[in-house]
Length: 120
Image (cartoon, rainbow, N blue to C red; front, top):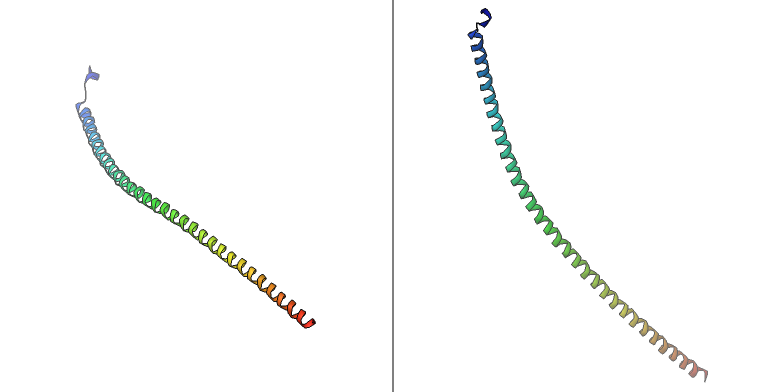
């Protein structure tokens, strides 16, 4: 029966130790909950920033698309102007060549007449 004696002081100390551990666990749990809440807040804030970045990126992409279209239109217009100038220059060159040929024929005809007059 001597072994049946329970040392209540030992059990009391164990209960106090357990209560301290429970208090520590509750405090740790509160810190974790606080950290989780802060992380959720950070995630929400980052989500908002990401949304704004995506909106800005969409606007930049739209601007680039419009700019690319303007550049394409500008180059097409420039190509057309160059082609028109080329045609106009070619037309003038052809006209000058015909005029030079005509002038050469007139000159040769005049030389031929003057040679014929001088020979007589």
